[in-house]
Amino acid sequence: MWKEYIKIKNYLKIEWRYFSLGIIFSLLSVSLNGISLSTIVPIMDRVLSQKQIALPTNLPQFISLKLQPIISKLNSFSPLLTLKYLIFFMIIAFFLKGSFIFFSNYFFRVFSTRISTNLREKIYEKFLNLPVDFFTKRQTGELTTRIVYDIGLLNITFETFFPQFLFQILLVFSYFVIIFLIDWKFTLISIFIYPLILIPVLNLTKKLRKLGKTIQELYARIANIINESILGYKIIKAFNQETNFINRFKKDNENIFKIIISINKRMLVISPFVEFAGVFASSWLIYYGGIKIIKGEMSAGFLFLFFFSLFSIISPLKTILQTYASIKHSSSALPRVYYILDYKSKVEEGREIFNGLKEKIEFKNVFFAYNKKFVLEKINLTINKGEKIGIVGKTGSGKTTLISLLLRFYDPCEGEILIDGKNIKKFRLDSYRKYIGYVPQEPIIFYGTIKENIIFGEEKIDRFNEVIEIVGLKNFIEQLPEKENTVIGERGIDLSGGQRQLISIARAIYKNPEILIFDEATASLDSESEEIVQKAIDKIMLEKTVFIITHRLSTIKNLNKIIVIENGKIFEEGSHEELLAKGGLYCKFLNLQKL
Image (cartoon, rainbow, N blue to C red):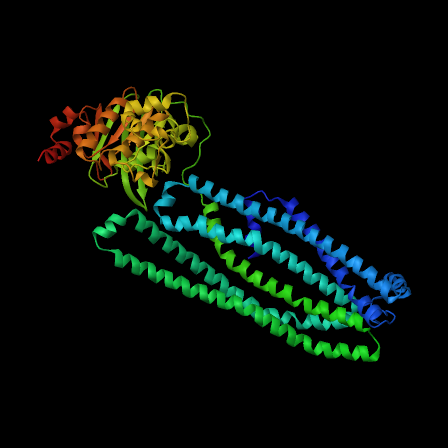
């Protein structure tokens, strides 16, 4: 478990100076706590009993030599004067102790919060740089849970449990030092007894880790059900599936309840068990200490200090064991987090800066497979700069996959894609994609203003007004109360399909790319919206190299070249007229659409 926590330093820059300061102030606080406790001896022996303070016979000689001058000085004071000095000392000591605790907790919190903050940032950054295949194999709810629940669990551990755990360990250590110095034989007997308490607690924590892993998986499933319910609420209602989804949610939710109860049951039993076992183990030690007072081997003050320190161990020991159980439980999130951080992308980053398309794009003998099943085979294709290419084919024929390879969402299994004779793998992804505008079939609208959705973090002077004019959004935006600063709902739920797609197109052309890709951009639109969007597309295609994937052949008949893909292979290639003359698959598709 501890190795997994230490592994974090491989991913983050750890601010060890805050940890060191936290330890220093903790040591100062614990030391003052021990010194404050020692005032019990003069209060018991000198003030209350009004006797001379006598050092225990078993006290180590070097300690006795150091303490004897102090004891002699205290014995020379009257009980009243001793009381005054002790009260003054205690006020100063507790003030300093409180200050040290504050600084200790502060520096530990800075240390821990910085780790959890950087870890959250690191894993989100990793998410955005993961390859597309990572997301296609996992549910949205599971991925969301890894950022929200897993990091939240670790956040609590770093910010609360670790500082508390370290401080309580130092506190227990200080109490052991006190009792060891008073009577080392007595202490060794105590040390032998107390570790026996830990055995059943450690067994409990092993089970807690397993339960923690199970509950994280269930939270991921629930998050996915919620996500599907929000995204597909219309389908759920249309197919009367409310009861089915509610039952699925109830089942997983009830399982979470049972596991949480199981976890709490195990964690809650730790405290009373440790307390009872500690008192039971200590009871016979009281008897042993009483005999020492009767024989005159130890004063009442030192015996009281011994037992006060001994019993004071119980509370921090309970906290240590409970905190350890929580840390163990939280550690189950680490493998899930490390899996993401260690995930190696199959799409390797190049080093060269891409400076734009000069002549042509070439697909040379390209193959690609999903799960060892080929979806593209022997793709050989040349697109000259400025050409407009239509890509058609049946659903699942490999059209979108072909474009995904050009965007480097994936890399070919065999063959290569060249731009001006250079393999696109050699280019840095950010510089390469800067020159590509992409419009997916389902327009993605982010929560924010219309302007924020279009400029998408890349503001250029006067470019916004030019773009909305080109795509035909200007009149619509001018009618809005806040114009381009109008906030649109999540996923653009307040907009029509055509408006969402026009915003998506505006975003694609805002950065003025040289290559434009339209992946079924009008497929989900009604006839009126399709006409508006198609006019926008026709207007922006000039002087661009364009790829258009479509089922509606009427939208691509004027393009330079049309490619027909069948079963992952280029079946036909040519202009609209050339393909009609062949009377092949393209002609068949066209006749079907005329019916």
